[in-house]
Amino acid sequence: MMKSFQGLAFAVAGALFVTLPGTAKAVPILIVENGQLLGANNVDVNGTLFDVRFRDGSCITLFSGCDNATEDFAFTDSASAQAAARALRDQVFFDGVEGNFDTSPALSSGCSFVFCDFAIPYELTFSSAVDSFFHQTFKNFNDNIQPDEIVTDVPIPRDFDYTPDITETFAVFTPAGTGVSVTVPEPSSLALLGLGLAGLGFARRKGMWRKG
Image 1 (cartoon, helix red, strand yellow):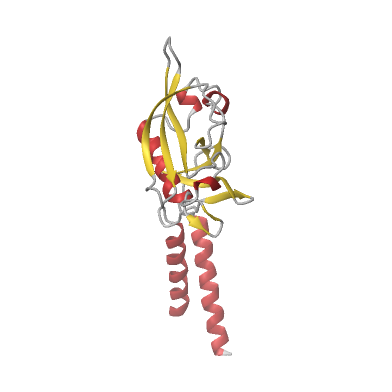
Image 2 (image 1 turned 90 degrees about the vertical axis):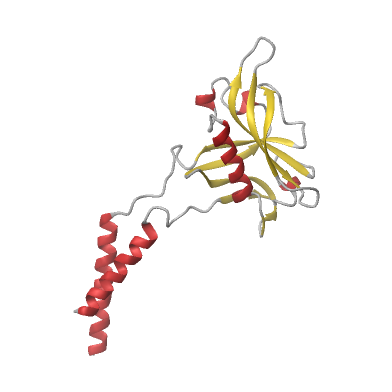
Protein backbone atom coordinates (compact mmCIF):
# COMPACT_ATOMS: atom_id res chain seq x y z
CA MET A 1 0.00 0.00 0.00
CA MET A 2 2.85 2.39 0.84
CA LYS A 3 4.37 1.90 -2.60
CA SER A 4 1.02 2.63 -4.20
CA PHE A 5 0.83 5.95 -2.38
CA GLN A 6 4.43 6.69 -3.37
CA GLY A 7 3.54 6.13 -7.01
CA LEU A 8 0.58 8.45 -6.70
CA ALA A 9 2.70 11.13 -5.03
CA PHE A 10 5.36 10.98 -7.74
CA ALA A 11 2.77 11.18 -10.51
CA VAL A 12 1.04 14.22 -8.99
CA ALA A 13 4.37 15.95 -8.33
CA GLY A 14 5.43 15.36 -11.92
CA ALA A 15 2.17 16.75 -13.25
CA LEU A 16 2.51 19.86 -11.12
CA PHE A 17 6.06 20.39 -12.36
CA VAL A 18 5.19 20.29 -16.04
CA THR A 19 1.97 22.33 -15.83
CA LEU A 20 2.53 25.04 -13.24
CA PRO A 21 2.64 28.54 -14.74
CA GLY A 22 6.19 29.47 -15.64
CA THR A 23 7.48 25.90 -15.80
CA ALA A 24 6.40 25.41 -19.43
CA LYS A 25 7.26 27.73 -22.30
CA ALA A 26 6.36 27.68 -25.95
CA VAL A 27 9.38 27.42 -28.22
CA PRO A 28 9.51 29.85 -31.18
CA ILE A 29 9.16 28.11 -34.54
CA LEU A 30 11.18 29.69 -37.35
CA ILE A 31 9.43 29.97 -40.72
CA VAL A 32 12.09 29.15 -43.33
CA GLU A 33 11.59 28.55 -47.04
CA ASN A 34 14.47 27.74 -49.40
CA GLY A 35 16.94 28.92 -46.78
CA GLN A 36 15.23 32.30 -46.31
CA LEU A 37 13.84 33.39 -42.95
CA LEU A 38 10.28 34.63 -43.44
CA GLY A 39 9.39 35.05 -39.75
CA ALA A 40 8.53 32.94 -36.72
CA ASN A 41 5.60 31.65 -34.68
CA ASN A 42 5.20 31.66 -30.89
CA VAL A 43 7.53 34.57 -30.19
CA ASP A 44 7.22 35.54 -26.52
CA VAL A 45 6.86 39.29 -25.96
CA ASN A 46 6.39 40.12 -22.28
CA GLY A 47 4.61 36.81 -21.65
CA THR A 48 2.27 36.92 -24.66
CA LEU A 49 2.87 34.84 -27.78
CA PHE A 50 2.94 36.41 -31.23
CA ASP A 51 3.52 35.31 -34.79
CA VAL A 52 5.76 37.61 -36.82
CA ARG A 53 6.36 37.93 -40.56
CA PHE A 54 8.93 40.05 -42.36
CA ARG A 55 7.23 41.92 -45.18
CA ASP A 56 7.98 44.73 -47.58
CA GLY A 57 5.45 47.44 -48.36
CA SER A 58 4.20 50.59 -46.67
CA CYS A 59 2.61 51.07 -43.28
CA ILE A 60 -0.69 51.81 -45.05
CA THR A 61 -0.67 48.56 -47.06
CA LEU A 62 0.52 46.27 -44.27
CA PHE A 63 -1.26 47.69 -41.20
CA SER A 64 -4.93 48.08 -42.14
CA GLY A 65 -4.54 51.60 -43.49
CA CYS A 66 -2.11 52.69 -40.76
CA ASP A 67 -4.63 55.24 -39.50
CA ASN A 68 -5.43 54.02 -35.98
CA ALA A 69 -2.53 52.87 -33.83
CA THR A 70 -4.72 51.13 -31.25
CA GLU A 71 -6.50 49.02 -33.87
CA ASP A 72 -3.73 48.58 -36.45
CA PHE A 73 -0.57 47.94 -34.41
CA ALA A 74 0.23 44.99 -32.15
CA PHE A 75 2.13 47.38 -29.84
CA THR A 76 1.02 50.91 -29.05
CA ASP A 77 3.86 52.34 -26.97
CA SER A 78 7.61 52.56 -27.29
CA ALA A 79 8.36 50.17 -24.42
CA SER A 80 6.27 47.27 -25.77
CA ALA A 81 7.58 47.76 -29.33
CA GLN A 82 11.09 47.73 -27.90
CA ALA A 83 10.30 44.47 -26.10
CA ALA A 84 9.19 43.03 -29.44
CA ALA A 85 12.49 44.09 -30.99
CA ARG A 86 14.37 42.36 -28.16
CA ALA A 87 12.30 39.23 -28.75
CA LEU A 88 13.43 39.24 -32.38
CA ARG A 89 17.03 39.58 -31.31
CA ASP A 90 16.89 36.91 -28.60
CA GLN A 91 14.45 34.35 -30.01
CA VAL A 92 14.49 34.60 -33.81
CA PHE A 93 17.79 35.85 -35.15
CA PHE A 94 20.35 33.24 -34.20
CA ASP A 95 22.70 30.91 -36.05
CA GLY A 96 21.51 27.32 -36.16
CA VAL A 97 20.86 24.30 -38.32
CA GLU A 98 18.22 26.17 -40.35
CA GLY A 99 20.56 29.02 -41.23
CA ASN A 100 22.96 31.64 -39.90
CA PHE A 101 20.30 34.31 -39.55
CA ASP A 102 22.29 36.33 -37.01
CA THR A 103 25.55 36.63 -38.91
CA SER A 104 23.98 36.69 -42.39
CA PRO A 105 21.15 39.30 -42.50
CA ALA A 106 20.74 38.79 -46.25
CA LEU A 107 19.09 35.43 -45.47
CA SER A 108 16.04 37.28 -44.10
CA SER A 109 13.00 38.09 -46.22
CA GLY A 110 13.04 41.72 -47.37
CA CYS A 111 16.81 42.05 -47.08
CA SER A 112 19.79 41.44 -49.33
CA PHE A 113 22.65 43.29 -47.65
CA VAL A 114 25.10 42.93 -44.74
CA PHE A 115 22.61 44.54 -42.37
CA CYS A 116 18.84 44.77 -42.14
CA ASP A 117 16.42 47.00 -40.23
CA PHE A 118 13.12 45.51 -39.01
CA ALA A 119 10.57 48.23 -38.23
CA ILE A 120 7.91 47.75 -35.54
CA PRO A 121 5.33 50.60 -35.64
CA TYR A 122 3.68 51.73 -32.41
CA GLU A 123 2.42 55.32 -32.77
CA LEU A 124 1.04 57.70 -35.41
CA THR A 125 1.38 61.40 -35.94
CA PHE A 126 -0.87 63.43 -38.24
CA SER A 127 0.08 66.88 -39.53
CA SER A 128 -0.62 69.21 -42.42
CA ALA A 129 2.83 68.39 -43.83
CA VAL A 130 3.01 64.59 -43.68
CA ASP A 131 1.34 61.76 -41.76
CA SER A 132 3.96 59.50 -40.18
CA PHE A 133 4.46 56.57 -37.85
CA PHE A 134 6.91 56.09 -35.01
CA HIS A 135 8.67 52.75 -34.72
CA GLN A 136 11.26 50.74 -32.88
CA THR A 137 13.85 49.10 -35.10
CA PHE A 138 15.82 45.93 -34.61
CA LYS A 139 19.03 46.35 -36.60
CA ASN A 140 20.52 42.98 -37.50
CA PHE A 141 24.16 43.41 -38.51
CA ASN A 142 26.70 41.00 -39.87
CA ASP A 143 28.53 40.32 -36.60
CA ASN A 144 31.88 40.83 -38.32
CA ILE A 145 30.89 44.47 -38.87
CA GLN A 146 29.24 45.49 -35.59
CA PRO A 147 26.86 44.19 -32.89
CA ASP A 148 23.09 44.19 -33.36
CA GLU A 149 21.16 47.22 -32.11
CA ILE A 150 17.66 48.23 -31.02
CA VAL A 151 16.88 51.89 -31.70
CA THR A 152 14.00 54.36 -31.61
CA ASP A 153 13.83 55.61 -35.19
CA VAL A 154 12.67 58.92 -36.60
CA PRO A 155 9.08 59.11 -37.92
CA ILE A 156 8.51 57.67 -41.40
CA PRO A 157 5.67 58.70 -43.78
CA ARG A 158 2.75 56.28 -43.65
CA ASP A 159 2.88 55.71 -47.40
CA PHE A 160 6.64 55.17 -47.63
CA ASP A 161 7.24 51.85 -49.42
CA TYR A 162 10.10 49.70 -48.12
CA THR A 163 9.99 47.32 -51.10
CA PRO A 164 12.84 48.88 -53.15
CA ASP A 165 15.07 49.18 -50.07
CA ILE A 166 17.38 46.18 -49.64
CA THR A 167 18.09 47.06 -46.00
CA GLU A 168 14.62 47.90 -44.61
CA THR A 169 11.50 45.83 -44.00
CA PHE A 170 8.64 45.55 -41.54
CA ALA A 171 8.23 43.05 -38.71
CA VAL A 172 4.46 42.45 -38.71
CA PHE A 173 3.35 40.98 -35.37
CA THR A 174 -0.03 39.32 -34.84
CA PRO A 175 -1.35 37.39 -31.82
CA ALA A 176 -0.30 33.75 -32.10
CA GLY A 177 -2.64 31.03 -33.27
CA THR A 178 -6.30 31.94 -33.56
CA GLY A 179 -5.94 35.68 -33.23
CA VAL A 180 -6.08 35.87 -29.42
CA SER A 181 -3.30 36.12 -26.87
CA VAL A 182 -1.90 32.76 -25.84
CA THR A 183 -0.78 32.18 -22.26
CA VAL A 184 0.52 29.19 -20.35
CA PRO A 185 -2.56 27.37 -18.99
CA GLU A 186 -3.23 26.79 -15.33
CA PRO A 187 -2.91 23.17 -14.14
CA SER A 188 -6.08 21.19 -14.78
CA SER A 189 -7.40 19.49 -11.67
CA LEU A 190 -8.91 16.75 -13.79
CA ALA A 191 -5.62 16.18 -15.60
CA LEU A 192 -3.73 16.01 -12.31
CA LEU A 193 -6.25 13.53 -10.92
CA GLY A 194 -5.97 11.39 -14.04
CA LEU A 195 -2.18 11.34 -13.85
CA GLY A 196 -2.32 10.54 -10.17
CA LEU A 197 -4.65 7.60 -10.75
CA ALA A 198 -2.39 6.40 -13.54
CA GLY A 199 0.55 6.49 -11.14
CA LEU A 200 -1.47 4.57 -8.56
CA GLY A 201 -2.38 1.93 -11.12
CA PHE A 202 1.22 1.61 -12.23
CA ALA A 203 2.41 1.17 -8.65
CA ARG A 204 -0.22 -1.54 -8.02
CA ARG A 205 0.76 -3.43 -11.18
CA LYS A 206 4.40 -3.22 -10.22
CA GLY A 207 3.57 -4.78 -6.82
CA MET A 208 1.59 -7.58 -8.48
CA TRP A 209 4.47 -8.38 -10.83
CA ARG A 210 6.87 -8.66 -7.90
CA LYS A 211 4.49 -10.99 -6.07
CA GLY A 212 4.22 -13.17 -9.19
